[in-house]
Image 1 (tube, rainbow, N blue to C red):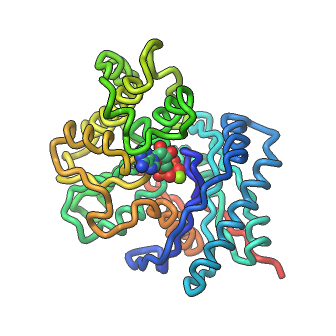
Image 2 (image 1 turned 180 degrees about the horizontal axis):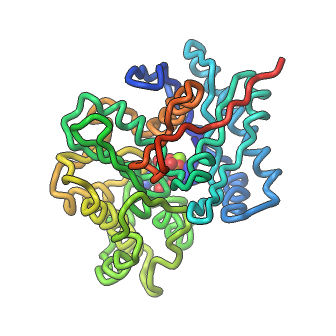
Length: 347
Ligand SMILES: Nc1ncnc2c1ncn2[C@@H]1O[C@H](COP(=O)(O)OP(=O)(O)O)[C@@H](O)[C@H]1O
Ligand SMILES: [Mg+2]
């Protein structure tokens, strides 16, 4: 998995039937080299001429697989779910594009690959995102409901899981870490607001938060999804680095709070995965705004850095078995839809 934060590649193994049974194995992250991260950033939003970056991205994924095999020699696997990297997501134009060459990855890793998870959903009129919800629901079977699983990557996305069979609702909440990362990168030589240090030292510009939340996205009913850069120019000029970070952190939390209006009932608890759960300023703002327990998914024994990678392993098995990857309540597709494309190793 390569998420919109552009931080690197997450690799994880699971053993699963693609339904109820999931056994998690080891996981690791291979950060992108800085120079490649900037090349990848350079093709975001493009509609063509990305072949070189795509090949390089695929080779880096093959390196991640090789490094994983060295580090975890006992964690064998027969199938790879290869999400690729989203460079363009415009579902309303029936367009979503994850770069990554499935055939090349199969050849380099000598392993069958499922890639291109989102196209079928978008072609059928779905949002193509989020896709992790079915995995969240499979993992949440023993938890008390309703519960919300919140993934704070570059973008934020939530899976609301109710007590009934297949009672699930999912959508993108708003910005996750991407705006904070972009702000800190613009004003300092760092890539992120590590441990929320800037945000915790700053003051929130409340009017900017209120103005941000007035955008139509937040009142729009789900299904709905976002591209990384759907909220440019989020901040008024004139804020210092700490106040800007505090304000963007509050914007992330406020957009999560705005998601509750769309849920059939408020969750009893929020479980947070993705890099944003490591940011205490975000977690404090969420706790303040949501009024129910907000915990890292580690609280229920899950690995919050590996969950999205595990989800695409799970979806790869579902794809192989012809099971749905998306539901009308997760992406707005007209009926439960399978997807993904198989690239077999050719000998
Ligand atoms: N210790 C930390 N403090 C603050 N932010 C963090 C920390 N660790 C990770 N992050 C944030 O998490 C992001 C990576 O999260 P990740 O879940 O990998 O997102 P994605 O799925 O978009 O790649 C980083 O870009 C950074 O903003
Ligand atoms: Mg990441």
